[in-house]
Image 1 (cartoon, rainbow, N blue to C red):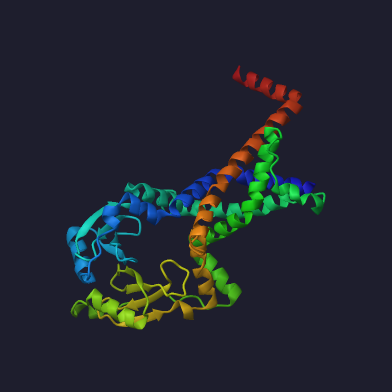
Image 2 (cartoon, rainbow, N blue to C red):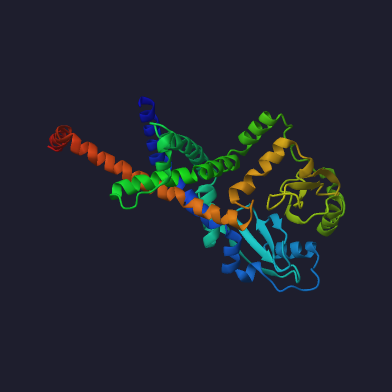
Length: 380
C-alpha cells in the first residue's frame, strides 16, 4: 500500500504539472492529422489548379518565385503529388513564408506566412508552442512525463486484490453517483487509450530529441549511424549554372520513384538534395535522398532507404506512426479520437483531485480552523 501511495502521488502531480501541455498537444494534434485536407478547403486558390497536358520546366517556376520574392530565399520545394496540386516553396526557413506556384503555367499564385493561417498557426502551436526551440523542449519533456503517467496509471488501474476484479476497470457505472462516474470514466478511458498514448508519446519524444533517440536505437540494434551530408566544392562556382530540371532527370534515373521535396543549399558548401519516396516506404515524404554538388551537379551520394541500416529503418517509421499515416484513413481517424483523451483524463483527474481535497478539509475541521485562524492573525 505504501508503494501504491507513492505511485499515486507521482501520477497525480505529474498530471497536474504537465496536464495542460498534454491537453493542448492532443487537441492540436487531432486537428493537424487532416491538415492538408483542411488547407485545401480553406485555400483552394493556392493549393489546386486546373490540369493541363504539360508542365513548364521546374527551373522556370523557381526563377519566377525568386523574381516575385527577391528578398526571400527558397529553402524547400514540395513537388505536386497529384495532377491538380501546386508547387509549394518554403522561403527562409521551414516555418516562414509559403509561396505557391502553378506547375502548368509557372505563375506564382500567392503566398502567406505559416502563422497567418489558422491551420498553420495550429501546426506551430502543436510542434513548438509558438516559442521555437524552447517550446519544442517543453513538449518533449511533457511527452516523457506522459510516458511516466501511462506506466503509473496502469499500475494504479491494476486491482490490488487480484485479477478476478480486473473487468471492473473496463466499465463505467453510469447510474452511479457522479463522483463514481467520474472515477470510472478516468479509469476506463485511461486503460483504453494508454497503449496509444505511450506510442504517441514515444514517437513525439523521438521527433524532439531525435539525436538521442537515434543514438539509442543504433546502440540497441548495433547499427552504423547515418553519415553527415556530403559537401559541395565551392571551387566549381565559376562554371555554368546547373538546371534544376537536369538534376531531377538524373535523380529519376538513379532512383525511379516520385520526387517529394527538394532542399536548396543555404551555404557555399551545402549540397542540393532531392528527396524521393519509394513504393515500399510508409513515410509520407520518403526517406531516400540524392545529394548533388550545387555547382557541378555531380552526384555526391545516394541514400536508398531500402539499403539503410536497421537502426535508421526503425527510426524512419516513428514519424509515420506519430502522424497516423500507417493504416490509412482508419488510423488517422483513431489518431483524432486519441487526441481528445488527454482532455478527458485531465478534466476527470482534476475533479477527482479537487474532491479529495474537499474530503480532507471536512475530515480535519480542527486543522482547517487552525489554518484559517493563523491567516487571520497574519492579516492583522
